[in-house]
Image (cartoon, rainbow, N blue to C red):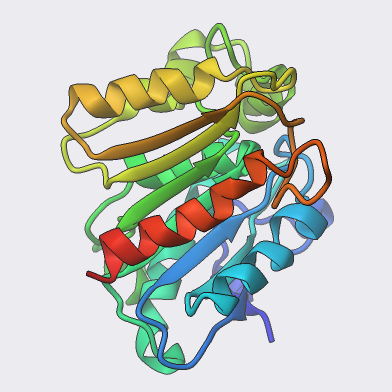
Length: 264
């Protein structure tokens, strides 16, 4: 059963003609010591569930980690709605911790490609609770860990143009706005530790996205683990074919990262 992020009449920036309301799909395991929210990629125009959604959640479940798959809004929605979705998702997963049986302070935010950019919004634009909304809005939207997979992170020189255009909408040429949503420009002193992986030959989202963000994290002395694999196409997911199998090591490394940083 999917969990709605808001009651139907309270969804910010909602237009029923633009697709379904944002939801979370719980895929939890009994006695989990941590939980991960998964944002599939899709250039902010779709969500690639078949490679970057439920199969990823199932793998984490097999390793004792609960998961939620996030269906966030995409174009024609823009950053106004999309940003609200990811911050609310963290609040809701933290709110539901007792119900599903995982610690509320052991929540990782994971994203692929444009979903990685969405995750970076949660990692850099979070708050510790708001007083201008409902009871859920009073809960912190800060993830405890970040996992970014071949992510779009900068909206500058090395960006994925379609992701930038779809996220920013009619303001896509606004450079000040693009800088605001460039993750490497938005790292805070309290940004949580991050795990990053990319492939050097990614021709869709250049590896410089990950490198720029890693440098920004290190400049703030935020713990970061980064893996740059030589081969593998963009959107490889778990990397199960012969060509991407080596890069597919990322998911076991990410599982270990969660165990080491969240469950110790």
